[in-house]
Picture (tube, one colour):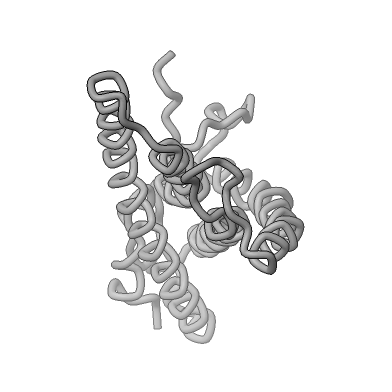
Length: 212
C-alpha cells in the first residue's frame, strides 16, 4: 500500500506537489511507516506555521508600540521602561520562534556554494546531511546549554533592574524553546526528504537566492 494522499496533505509550504509515488507501492510495511512519519511531520509543520502567524502579528504590534511610545515621549513627555523592554521582548520572540517558521518555508539564507548547481536529488541529499549532522545537533546543544540560564532566572524570579521594567525570566524561556522548535522543524524536514529520496513522495525543495 502506498502512502495515501491524506497522509501528505498536511505537509504544505515549501513542499509542494506532495503525492504518492507508484514505485513505492510494492513496499507496504515501509509505506505504513512513512505514512506515520509524514503525519508527524505534518503536525510539526502545523505547529510552526501557527508560530509563524504569531510572530507576524508581533512584527506589526512591535511597530505600533514603538511608534506610539515615541509619539507619547516627544509629544507629551510620557514614557516608561516597560514599553521599551516589551519591544525587545517581542523582537526576541520574533527571532527565536520565527527561525523554525522560516525553515518551514525554506527561506533561510543559504551559504552552500554548490547547492544551486546540484540536481534536485543532490539538493535533497545535501539538505538531509546538513540537517542531521549540523542543524539538529546544534539546536539541541544550544537548548540544553540555555536551559540553566532560564532556570536560574526563574528560581529567583528575576525582574528588570530598570524602574518600571518587566519580569525577565519568562522571556529567557524563549531561548531554549526556540531552539527546540527549530530542531523539531529540522526533524520534519528530514522525514520529508527521506520520503522523497525513497520515492514515496515528491517535494519541491527549490531554493531561490534572495535578490541582492
